[in-house]
Length: 136
Ligand code: 5GP
Ligand code: ZN
Image (cartoon, rainbow, N blue to C red):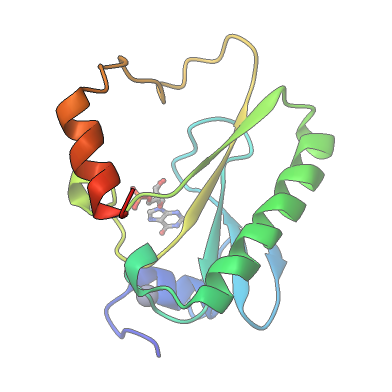
């Protein structure tokens, strides 16, 4: 299914041109227009799924295998020092385009990308509550 109003549906299906690194029947991998670092790429499924919650298992599995291939090749090309794979779900998590996508962000020693957070504390109360919801 495609969403007429979704920019990533149009890009993924070639209706809007993009700098495409890879394409197959299910996915297109493009260069991000606002890269965090040199080589920042996005994996887009051609079908419209708003987020991870909506993504079928088969596409989820294939997407991560593709992420591995792209990261391997991009690391050779860019000679970067590491990689972050980021996938935002929901506006509060930083999602701005509501068509599932995976960010592939090359990292370079001493780059200024701010993907870190201040560690909190795992409280006994939170731990018990969450483990209980898994029957543990
Ligand atoms: P999100 O914040 O939803 O996780 O990520 C959206 C990403 O899409 C951002 O990194 C943004 O730079 C990128 N982006 C938004 N519009 C376009 C576009 O039209 N073309 C490309 N190539 N990237 C886009
Ligand atoms: Zn879409």
